[in-house]
Image (tube, rainbow, N blue to C red):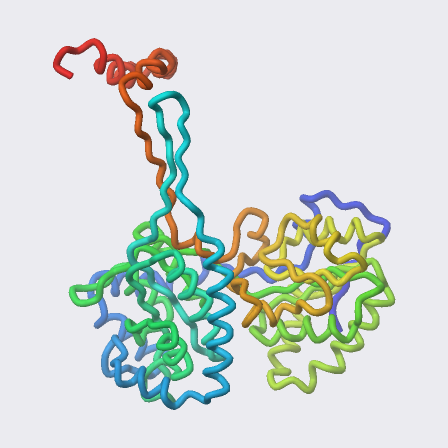
Length: 436
């Protein structure tokens, strides 16, 4: 069922690996002409334009942009108690881990009287996008809101699309998740118009400084268009899982994990990297049999048979590790002998799941880690959402006269070498000019 890339007997270069590894690819450029007028209209006319586009695209228009407190309260009161308990448990685990990520300010005395420090300051106001569409994503509320709160962000707004079958408001489970986290400002806006409205605001809706959260290609395009006026987390593509496995892996468990990520999106990527042809055959059989009984089997089938998914065969575990690093998966499972040791060799992955009892769905919901992770190979240089995402580090320089005088000659010499003499004069004047 899954396509195969057989690398046995071959040693492709890193450049070649990047070319031949299965990738779906999302071409943001081709939707920019459609998204640009949306962003420009919302920039110029604010919420009125956002509501107009939402009605045009999704055939639903909320009574107001901001969700009333009464609607949020009703959603919270009516939430299934088992879902409330599950969300509460997930919030607790995610909060504990993200609280542990908080860095501390530091100061170093470079020389007597010369202090250089680093302060960590939370972003003032953040906009968090929670998608609608194929599924309901209260987990995305948790994964975006909790690290922002732990960072100390003082002002949060959550944007989520209005739903026609939910009275024109975002899904009640999303509203309830916001309520459990103490988020009171929720806008019933989705798509690229939501990103633009958070970025630009209007006379009644305050703009934000940073936007995070997953979304479809139109949301991603809007992020690209707005990043000159607001910070963004990333231009995320469809979700992906790679399973690095050897002959000790259980093919049934591997098959379940590949299927689990495939149900997110027809463009989701599910990849097995192994040096065991026997495991590859067994996993392929299990996937072909088990996907058919899943709720979203058509979507799963499209994802698993797409060019972005497949099985990669290698000669050795060492080569499998090399391939996994070149692929740089959003989610990487390691199901091998000495899985911890193998995982320690991985340098490129959004998140690493070690052993048979750390499946990706655990991280999606309740491991405590964040599920907003780099996709499309960007884990080679980027990281997932964390408390650090919502913090700015600011260098603080505090020299006294003695400390400056000691290093003044160095500053003047380097300034002259760069043909920027005014830089040096600004330092010398502290000692030569009686007016200072």
